[in-house]
Amino acid sequence: MKEMFERPQNRSFYHLPNFDPRHDGCRGLACFVARGLNPGRWTRSCDQGNRVYCLGKCYLGPAAAADHAMPHIEVCGPQGIVLSRLASGGALALEQYRKSGGYAAIGKALRMSPESIVQELEISQLRGRGGAAFPTGRKWRMMLSGQSPEKVVVANADEGDPGAYIDRFILEHDPHAVLEAMLIAGYATGAGRGWIYLRKEYPDAALSLKQALHDARSAGLLGPDVLGSGFSFDIEVFIGQGSYVCGEETSLLNSLEGKRPEVRIRPPYPTESGLFGRPTLINNVETLASVPWIVLHGGEAYRALGFSQSRGTKVISLNSLFRRPGLYEVEFGMPVRRIVADIGGGLRGGKLHGLVVGGPLAGIIPPHLLDTPFGFEELNAIGACIGHGGVVAFDERTSIAQLAQEVFEFGAFESCGRCTPCRLGARRIAKLLAGEARWDRRQFDDIVAALHSTSLCAMGTGLADFAFSVLRYYREELETCLVSPLTAAG
Image (cartoon, rainbow, N blue to C red; front, top):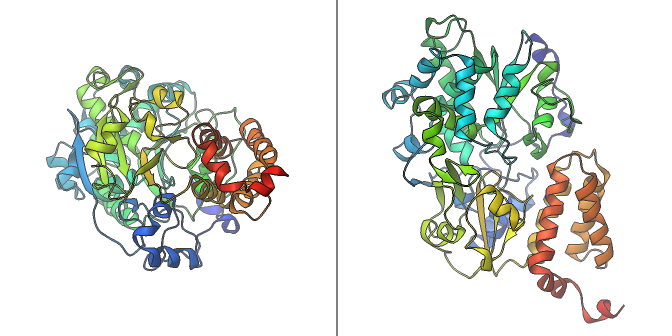
């Protein structure tokens, strides 16, 4: 795909052309709610030149780029599908990965038909782990059905949700799991080329992937004749320059093409016309990491885990306000309360005020709803979501007005600018919440309604969902914080 290198990246849009992994601190939501644990570090993060909204170190929040401590990693369920190797120390080297059964799945896949692989994914009921929860088998089916001589597989490693650091550790310590899954995806859907879109904030992941790709090519696992099968597939890494919206798949494609990373209008969908007009399969890192297990053990075995419409397992990442922050692989269906109290050990101090699950563009789970089962539809029913799986707890030291202001400032800063309500409305709401403009509930409601109904992507609609949740569960507290007796009378 020669044209990839003939189009310079549109750097004027991006936030981190000069990102310094030695010095920059984190401004993400998980670090914001933990600012009281280290006020000096938080202040330095706010004063720095680069505004970095997540370093993937939420278990250390408030975090700095120079922090290198590993989080606790544990499988909390009957079966470790994604974290089994990570919980045992990782498998960075090719020989480690192979000793743990790695690359057996691609060997098996090459003896299967592409149709049968896609069928196993459909049976498994695996859904995307990047936020949208789209059925993975259905997406692969659409890709397989496309009639094109050139198809592409893209791993979305732009893990930008503040509070999530799942993909980071998979890529840093188990990179071959993603390479193997991309090989399987390429064979199953007829693609011959793969790209990993990696966020710039993960420099250690870039090093791990570079070594893994070198080792895989040397072993005949990538290239013109994979394992002597005649199947050709190779993978390259593309480093983003700092933009939250690139986590949205069509913005990511524009970024890969060197264009301004704005959301594309759909249809056509990427499986029809994606990277440079070619049919493109896009899955996030955790979704891909589940694929080798499904190929080896079968879709039925995967579907046997979980409950309702949420099958299999999900990795969650807990922020530093928990007594036991870290990465945990859980089975769908457990009450959220168990995640907070048993897995996370409760909060280090203070009283739980709420949970933001799946990133800031989602609803809040108030304490009285902690018995809600951890599942896609179940959290959606209370205005929350699974999202990417980051679990950010905040205590009474963060008011709902402060939290909402931080979320809308994040939204305003990261907006691609294409939608007016997102570009201007999010900033206006941030000013209302910060007291820089007179509180006007009608204006607030009008902007939120516009975000919900006119936004092209989940940035705007997610901000609206967050606002709906605030009004649904914390309305009295919000208005008590923002409306003085004088303004209320006026």
